[in-house]
Image 1 (cartoon, each protein chain N blue to C red):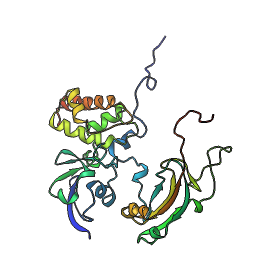
Image 2 (image 1 turned 90 degrees about the vertical axis):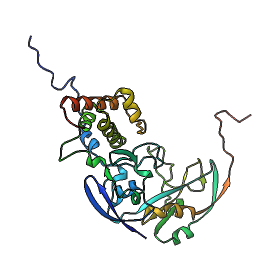
Image 3 (image 1 turned 60 degrees about the vertical axis):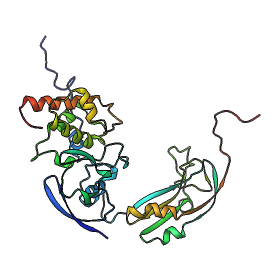
Length: 139
Length: 161
């Protein structure tokens, strides 16, 4: 019986993108720069469970360089991964349900003013009780 | 107000008008288009932004371009010479030391600086030299092996790192 040298099976091969990665040529999302692109940032809830009473975006919009401010009301369309789970909102509507729940989004001409723009968005919350333990609280 | 500075990067001099508060990381990536150096933590903890300053690894996220105009800056783009890869780049690719690849530019520059100073490092010396470069994917073993393989390649060819 003749022995054929195993050219592929059992021999290591560099990943298809190995050389791009070791030369710094590989493009990651953060590396993509487009002409006249806008920069965005999300304002997130500091509360685990709260009702959103009001959002005032006027001061943020007035900041020079801010192009747009969106809240949940601007994006009422629900979506979800499965046809049976179409209950997600891009930005919170009515309630926030975890610390970090996105509440508003800012788009600006340069990234330096994004933090300042977020600070200028006034959100009034009614903090609600949050269940933190995975045990039943029903009698 | 932007200031006019001159940076020497990868063997070339560049005159740039930069905002004084910009970090070297931001200037390299956004003003010079050298996106090989990565944003990681931007706090000086992860090493993804590592560049070489006169051959010494530094964190570009903590460096002000205004203060390094006299130095020779090397980024990942400058590791290869005239289209020829540094032995570390070859061994990283061949041994699978890069998975997602995000820590790789920083790892390569730290490793290159190590091999320049210590052509035959021990495993312990490699670990120490790369301690400032965090990797979430590989578990580091293949990275250390790639540095050792590059060291062997350099010393057996009688070349310089």
